[in-house]
Amino acid sequence: MKNNNVNSCCSTPNKIDSSKKSIVIDFLYLDVTICERCQGTDNSLDEAISEVSKVLEATDVKVILNKINVINEELARKYKFVTSPTIRINGKDIQMNFKENLCESCGDLCGDDVDCRVWIYEGKEYTKPPKAMIIEAILKEVYGGGIAKQEEQDYIIPQNLVKFYSSKKIKDAK
Image (tube, rainbow, N blue to C red; front, side, top):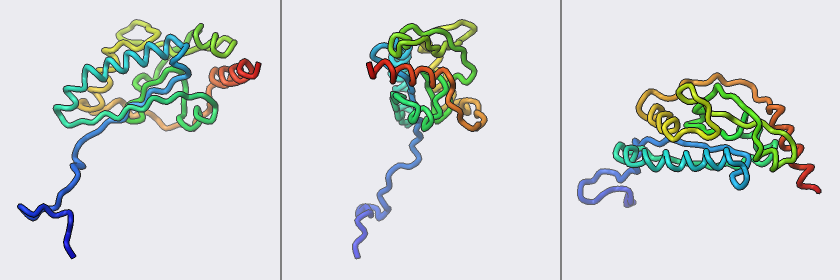
């Protein structure tokens, strides 16, 4: 039986390069059509990835980007969603210690007061993550030993998200 995986010139198996590293970036959000924070985070993330892509390509690191619209409680539970917007690299939130404050955009979306993430970078607060913050997190994960390991805890959907989803369901039913 002929082995189709053998290169005839040197008789070594052809293999897919499994040594190529990859990172998985998940962007979880409530809404990118109305929410200014989610839109800003989406734009910052795209710009950050664009800027580091040449470095990552040069060192054979593949970026897998997932943009996940967490539209209901089921998805929130599936992804263990704690606040919007969220960026995770290889499953780890780039900023586990976060603050939230009133997000008027998401309030308009659901018809109720909702708090969303405030990003803290170099001692300042931002409604969208600075591009430099995302770039640092990517580079740290790939070349610097990774983002600090986060304790696995039983997931309980935050009341803020319960309020958002129930208010949105009521508003959408009208």
